[in-house]
Amino acid sequence: MTDPLDFEARAAELLPEQIRNYFATGAGSQATLREAASAWSAVRFRPRSLTDVSSTSVSTTAFGSPVQTPVLIAPMAQQLAAHPEGEVAMGVAAQATGSLIGVSTHTAVRFADIAATGCLWWFQVYLMRERGVTELLVRRAIEHGARAIVLTADMIALLPSAVNPRDWPDGPAKARHANLTADELRTAGTRGLQTDPSAGVDTIGWLREISGLPVLVKGVLRGDDAQRCVDAGAAGLVVSTHGGRRMGASISSASALPEIAAAVPDSVEIYADSGIRSAEHVAAALALGARAVFVGRPAIWALAAEGRPGVERLIAGWSAELRLVMMQLGVADLSGFGPDLIG
Image 1 (cartoon, one colour):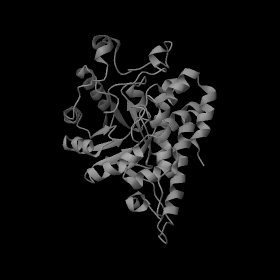
Image 2 (image 1 turned 135 degrees about the vertical axis):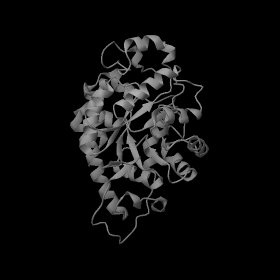
Image 3 (image 1 turned 90 degrees about the vertical axis):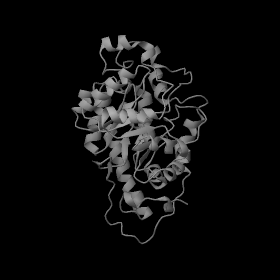
Image 4 (image 1 turned 180 degrees about the vertical axis):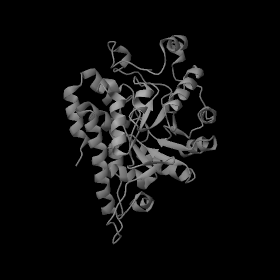
């Protein structure tokens, strides 16, 4: 069994306290963070009996691109703080396991270096006050092979945190915005790089127009918001609490997922994250309506503990364990997941 707690314990030994706390901490009261995994664990299954599971498959597609697993790697900033190869190691692991990675606007690794791994990757957009900077980054991401745009809608305002990378000593661990030049950063200024609190659903159409790529909206927790996003042109949704970093007392992704799945057409691709800690959790998300899941902290702990091999071991291990769960559920491939499996 691939237990992410093993990676977390090893990472805790290796990482400086401020970096360890940055990755581990949630927002506000941290209730959302504490309850995320238990919400997935509370899901109960209704297994099918006497179905042919002599051959199982965990492969699927993500906007038409084949992936060999529904366990995908979430976009995360400050990955160089976890490991000196950061997103490059994540990209190599994704390529090796047939997964994909999300790449943050705030990455300290160049798009070219990520693309050189040959991995499938999506660009996670934080819409900045200086809209031209966002457009510039989107166009550069496309030039280097990004296959979808993930608009982050859940981090408009951050609660004060005792753990902030801005307070870290200068160096690779603190670095961000590797895909902007010094002149571009200077021109935008600190305020121009801040997330734009005035952004509305019209942003979805704008991103689709300038990119020509599918646009997913990340951080949707309500069915009515899901409908608004789809009506505005979103091709996909990521049901997410940003790993408990959005606010301290929101509902969990596991709680929100069924409502959102019921609110939008089947053609809309739904993904989920926040609190996924096992293959059974992956199966729960698939049964509740997700096409695949993104994992954040488990991947960053694996990266910190063992580098690229650790991330590969996590993704491959969970994929193998998911096959066993599927056999127990009477599901031969991912198309067999549905709400009838939930008790």
